[in-house]
Length: 410
Image (cartoon, rainbow, N blue to C red; front, side, top):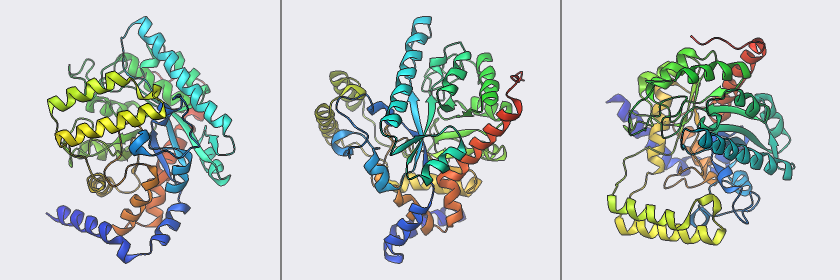
C-alpha cells in the first residue's frame, strides 16, 4: 500500500511540475546532463530514399523519432545506434545474408558519422563519449541487436568489435544458435544460453563488449549474470511487476542484475496492456505487406502508410500506452534497485514512444518528472548516462587485463 501511495504521489507531482518550477530551469538542468539512450533503432532509416539525419522529421507523417534537429531540441547527446537483424533461417545461406545485412547497416552508421563529422562522433570507449560531447557533437556508439549475424562463427565478433561494436544482445524475438528468446512461441530450446552462447559471453568479455539481455529469456539473463565477468545491461526492458509481459523483468532478477553491477534501461514498449483485435492485426499485416519494409519507403510512401495505419487505429479503437505508463516502470525500477542501476533505452524507431512522449524532442519530460519525484541532479546524471558508461568502463578494464587469452566458459 505504501509503495502504491508513493507512486501516485510521484505521478501527481510530475503532472503538476509546470506550476511548481520554471520550465527553463528544468531544461537548463537537462542540458547540463550527458544524455544517452541505449537503444536507437534509427539506422533503419539511413537507407531510405531521400531521408537525411540532418532534416527535422515529423513522427506523425514520417514514422521516424530521431534526427539531428530533434536530438538537439530534446537534449539527446547520443547513445547506442543499433544494428538490428530480424531472425531468419538458421542455415549457412541465412547466416550469410544476416552477416551481410549487419555489415551494411554498420557501414551506413559509420558513413553517417563520416559524412557529418561536424555533428557526430564515433565512440569506441566511455571516455570517447565525454570527449565527443565536450566538442559539441552527438555520440554514436554501435550495438548489435540479435547475434544471428554471427551464425556459428564467433570469430566474427572480433571483426564487428574492430569496426566499432561495443554492445551485443544475443537474441531477439525467436530462439537462435546462441540463446533462447523471451518470446519464442515454441518455448525454450536451450533453457538459457547454448554452448555457443556461453562461448559468446567469454569472447565478449575478452573483447570488452557489453552483453545485453533485452529480448532474452529469464534463464538467459540468469546465466549471463552468472557467467559474465563484467556487468550486464538490459538495453531496452521494463518491469514485470507493473506490466506482466515476458519481455519485462521481475523484481528478483532486477535485484540480481543490480547486485552484479548491471543496469536496466527502461523501455517505452510493453509498459501497459493495450487492446488487441485479430481483425485489426490482419489489416495491419496486409498494410505492411502492401508497402514493404519501412527501411525502403520514401517520405511520401511513409506518410501514406502512417495515415492508413492511424485510420485503422481509429477504426478499431486501439489504445496506446501513455507517458504515465512509462513513468510507472521507471519509478518502480528506481525504487527496487536505486539510481545506480537504472537508465533509459526507450526503443526509439523500433516501436517505442508513448502518448505524451512520441519522439526524442520530448526527453526533457523525463528529467522534469524525475526532479518532481525527488531525484537529485546527481541521480539524473547516473540515470541519463553515467550508469551505462560505468558498465562500459568495467568491460574495457576487464578486456585490458585479460585480452591475451579467452576465458574458458564455466
